[in-house]
Image (cartoon, rainbow, N blue to C red; front, side, top):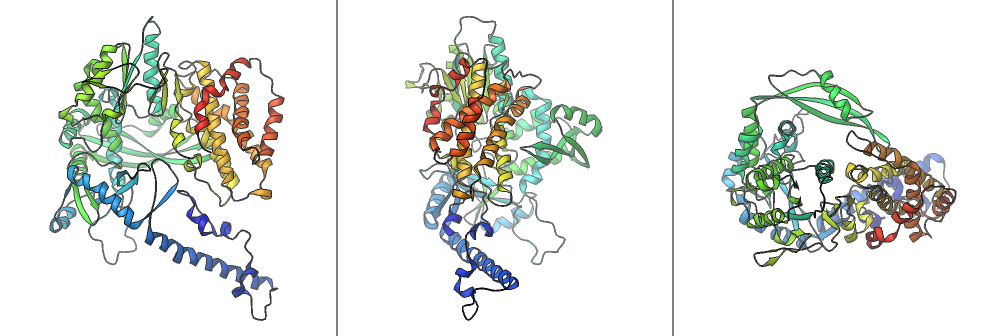
Length: 631
């Protein structure tokens, strides 16, 4: 049972009920009463069971967990997602020291111990702690400033009053500022230039560019991507504040309103807290705003929270100044100020980073505004596509030269193009597959701009490392919800819009999504508590059947947006789903014989008018990456 506890993944729970499965009270000699009397009345049996439960709880709570904490630093890994790693304390301390040393030299400045209390007492945001997350298997660490936990102060009341509220986190305090900045971003989208925040925005930009190219003939597309080195840690704080004052915050007062949205998600009903912002001189009634929201939230109930927060411009700027210029971090019992960059872990970091590089693009990369090209950058990942080889070459040259005013330097080793290019005597890496250009989890066709999902990142870890399995309280119901969640993870317009992708590419995206879901299904079932003869394969077959059937509804909701088209038949989706599950589960056929038999029976009775295209889609040569994924 200790081994099972140690093997648990991130966020997984091991219950007493699961630990004691197959465990007999009579096997514990110390629970048997004097005289070796094993039979007892019901009341005595219940009491013996309670004592056993308390003993098992004590073993874990007072022995196993403290021993693990004492000897190991337990953390997840950016590469392996939910899998936990146990580092011996002395080894972890050496790794942290090695990771902290370059930060002390470049990013952090130590605060003298005698000035710490004085500085913190005048701050609204307190200080946060830096957390190191392993980036790979080679010992490299990524520093993350933890701003989600309750805010830290140098001192608290020795006897806190019972009504004293738990301290807010720094991100909670900054949430109002985030809503205001986000509102200004929406009001002035040109501020961001090529910055994007989601695949849906990438889809919108690429679709517009593809429509522009529809009237052109005899052209080639040239691709280039660059990666900004340490994008959060290299931002110039003074320049960022200058940009915010001059380009972003335009009004003297803002009003932040809160409302709740109740909507279905993943087979259950979810409630989420939302905000909307308007200027101090405006007065917007919630029913009027709810009419606009109704276009965004389908099948949702919107509830006004009747809570308004007024923020003057100077208050917003003061809080931003403190957050950016006076960010205090504690590491190894010492306090530091961040003299360069912005904290990676702040609720504002992604938005501020996008605004910063959006303004840099406007200032330094005017030539990418040419109608014959499109610029995209998701945080530090820049992508430029153009019909002009000259413009793309200029983009790579300018980015490699750097922008000292913005402290922007690119990582030369991560730059990539789809044509032969040499800058200052050094060859820029050319993609291996000339037909598909990888960028931020996407594979973009270099001739047609059709887009597929890039599954190659799964090759370097095991599929089980991406899962969190719930084994307590209704695990079967949770499995149903998880299967729908697996489906919706890759449900973005950019994959399923048939007015953007061809039907063949759209069908391939659906098929590959099913292949990934099938792999996750196998690992999820293996992690369930009931194995062997206790398994219910009939239930598992029903779960697979319901997942495949519900996929059509999920994909229709994704594809049938105002600017999207989804011309795929329900029969085609179901056939692809059944075929994909069979292809994956047959690789583990001894484990899923009942489910395979059920799916084969369904496939035999399936009639399709046009099977030729689907047979091409399911060819393993089109999905060869899945052969290398471990599951």
